[in-house]
Amino acid sequence: MKHTKVKDLLNSAPGLHEVKAKGWVRTFRNNQFIALNDGSTINNIQCVVDFENTAEETLKRITTGAAVSVKGHLVESQGAGQKVEIQVSEIKILGDSDPEKFPMQPKKHSLEFLRENAHLRIRTNAFGAIMRVRSTLAFAVHQYFQEKGFFYVNTPIITGSDAEGAGEMFKVTALPFDGTPRTEEGKVNYKEDFFGKETNLTVSGQLEGETYAMALGQIYTFGPTFRAENSNTSRHLAEFWMIEPEVAFNNLADNMDLAEDFIKYVIKYTVDKCGDDLKFLEQRLLDEEKSKPQADRSEMALLEKLSFVMDNNFKRVSYTEAVDILKNSKPNKNKKFQYPIDDWGVDLQSEHERFLVEKHFKCPVILFDYPANIKAFYMRLNEDGKTVRAMDILFPGIGEIVGGSQREERYDVLLEKMKALGIDEKELYWYLDTRRFGSAVHSGFGLGFERLVLFVTGMTNIRDVIPFPRTPQNAEF
Image 1 (spheres, rainbow, N blue to C red):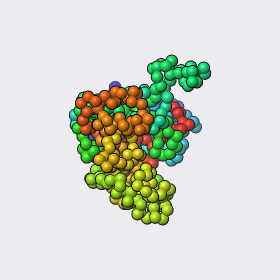
Image 2: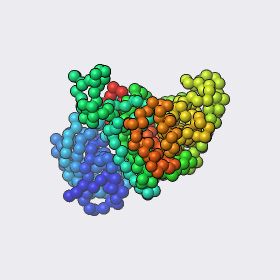
Image 3: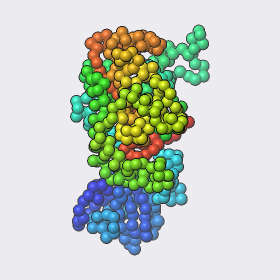
Image 4: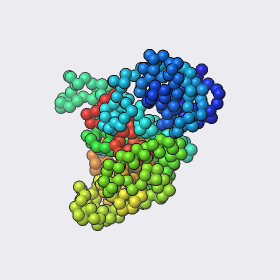
């Protein structure tokens, strides 16, 4: 007899037919009531054991974490909290779990403790909910772009180019660490390496994505990216997933429209599909915030915050206007910012971004037209010669969630910018070729997937929204 998912059983009407369920024991009360969960839903199904007619040895093995198979009738529940329950006629222990050693006992655990047990934390309600939401969001990403006629492109994970020009990359090599071949100048001789040149893990698939957009019209990538940035913060990972659409013939305004529409779509899809998980995460957040001072608590509950983003237009503000607002703000005048805003041209920090979103505009904000010298070489230079057609989308509690731009489509301007920054045109000849042969206005953006999951789940640390976080000094599991 095939087993039925707990989610489907809970949505079934009681009847005389026999059912089978498999899952893991969350709790076992009074030698009689098993709360069984199989991961298909945050909700458990109650399984009522006839303890008088069940072997003592079997009852002892029904412990938190044990994998079991139960067979019985799905009947109307006598207790509160569930419509149906299983009246167990047969139970099999599929896998024992020693209660003295199993770390995920039914009590409150700190998030730090759960990170140290990342291979088992998925057995908790919170992490089951987070990962189901993550999965749904990922599906929504693909559905949105496929419905809009975008083509999914897999850009290389091993690359010879540094798309961001930041240099914070993980090197890929097959050379031995002892006795590495050297050139006459004493440098590592990469000609003897596997690829015959220096290679790294990708920080972005954008440059390669642009080449495909200039033939297929509109493409998107969704894959892992890597930054060897020694940032031990709640917002940074060394390995994370990035969504990067590129669209031929789109200007900056089109790019902003696309990003806003995309974000609203995937959030709405997830709210519609993950109601139970999001209600649980909302309650978790409310309970967590009770211990905080009133001033540090969220102004909106989680589902209200998600509705707010879906229902309101994002405020579009130029970098210049944003700097004026920040310069004249109370925190800046009272020297409350860690990084004071003195002059036009500074790179905005998370504290500035969050002030604009959470305190000043009180809605998501799209900043655009940034100073050229704080943005990447591929962004289109404006007519003023000092700003570029860049855009960042800022979210409450997160700061920057999207970074994008209209790309520099003019060959001569792009070449000049590369020379000024010391970027080797021979290394990026293929990128320049897209400007030499049939160039056109085009735009795109990158969205860090984990930051989106962070926002939708209400979690506050990015390490809690990816299965196995990779951070400085940590590559466990």
